Image (spheres, rainbow, N blue to C red):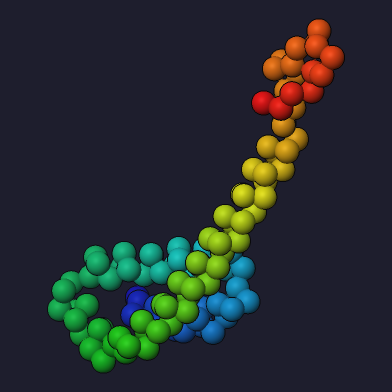
Length: 112
């Protein structure tokens, strides 16, 4: 079996380098593979896991993770903006409801 710690480090460093221009799909694939690698490490014998983690560059890993988290936050903000625009457009389209109008009135274009 390949070293999951080394693979995780390589994967995380590469994703951090590409995070600025990464797509949602790329970040999603990264997160899925990251989860798989952590699952593999959790199932390992504790002594074997400790041996693999010896010399783990924790500070670099945290910096890479921070860059990736910023990209994910950017995607979240973009999604929230799109959802807000969608809701506003829907509200504008449905601003006039025929069932709420009194058709016997001279002015029957009341808003909801």
